[in-house]
Length: 90
Length: 536
Image 1 (cartoon, rainbow over the protein chains, first blue to last red):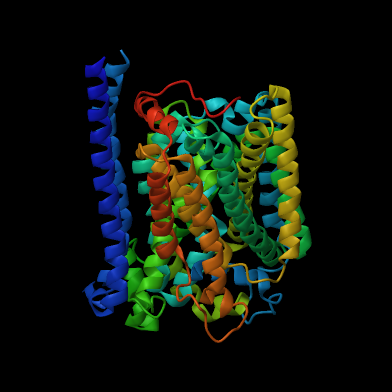
Image 2 (cartoon, each protein chain N blue to C red; image 1 turned 45 degrees about the horizontal axis):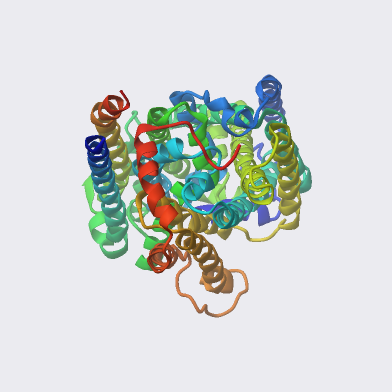
């Protein structure tokens, strides 16, 4: 039983670590983007190619980054978390 | 929150003068009416079908927990994407360029947070409302009263903004009077929720999400076809016509702290919106809850990426002058673009999409408000859980009627008022009143009843007080020269304040049962169990 409890807290800690890291990454990306808009407008006005400013590119990348972070989490949860939950529910 | 400001100015703008351009906007549009009646007929058919399947409170609040992950992904997107995001952001981009895109990203970034922190624990721990989760190992009565305060504040403010926006928009698009539009929206929504409960609400949201995505995709494709299917050519054309400045940050983010504060409200508010949280109870298990957020993030992100194309498309093809001559808020950018590219028929479809969008959001809001009134306050506080299933369903329906009529009354009362700030306020309350208590109760062993209640009450009240003292009300509405509190949105202060209050009060109050209950919470959060959220 004690082993079961240990396994559960290890699982909880692992989930919290992943969730915390990914939340921090999302905050860093979004607030980084906002900070650039606020403090370095010139950088974002720079055109990568004619018509595409760094601002538009990074704005689109914030959305793509949200997709990637959710995908990382879902992949981890489906592969590791669910397997462990399944094993413990046996 | 200028995107919303822009949207809701439509409600306060005088009826559109005959614009210099020829457009069918503002006149009764036969094709729009046809699409509108088809939508109403389909959704009433769904409601009739759903009503036969709504027999228990579990059906009424949680669609019998039979919604699939894919369906819930669409329903979440339909619940979340309001007319502000479709018409408001497209309009903002078309008139001010890059600055509008700041909102396109802000409205999405809350979704990963919902996935990482909230969706799965909520599904495994709760039953109908987020108060179920907070109250699980704490004392029911104080927690549910405080949670209902946060829920009802969020829902009422959001409802006012949606109803006032609906009245203005529908008047603009169909030529109906403001009051008629508000009453139609209120009665249609009331019919869905009252008879079809969560099953009908879910399908209305799915139909809306499909219509919105289809309309936006078609519009984006028609725009891109004019620019060699390369968005960069479109941006270059915009710079050609209106200068390079439209592709770069402008004046919108003048005060960095304002931008960060609004960003925090959007990011953490999504994870505290009662109508969004409630949707996680409709799926079968935690894995389905997880997958549904993944789909929702994909759909919502795709939609906001398309607003880049729609906004700049309207700027180049329609032109900001024409857009603001039809509606000075710029909300008619996407409809005008549709009319230009697809004629009156496409305009009619987009008008119907805007209508469906509002209906789906208000239906979700009303249902979550009804759950707080009946499940949290009536069943668990007043009757202490001793309620027959029949009475529960009766009270839930009574609360729905009350909220539906209240929504109509609020919509008419606030006619012509500037209510734009109310959505940002709703997000700020959700982020400061609901989200911190939810996180503390799920993840922190030492959280106590007093701590959770203090966090919810302080978060909600501080947000209301600070918004009153902010430039949003003092300068924009009351026209005072200055404001005591500098930020337009208080989330930067109120979210940390709410967390801090919850932690400090918990540390100063000992509650053995709350602490001992944590092990069971942890087990159920991960391993799942029969959902128990107060008494049934």
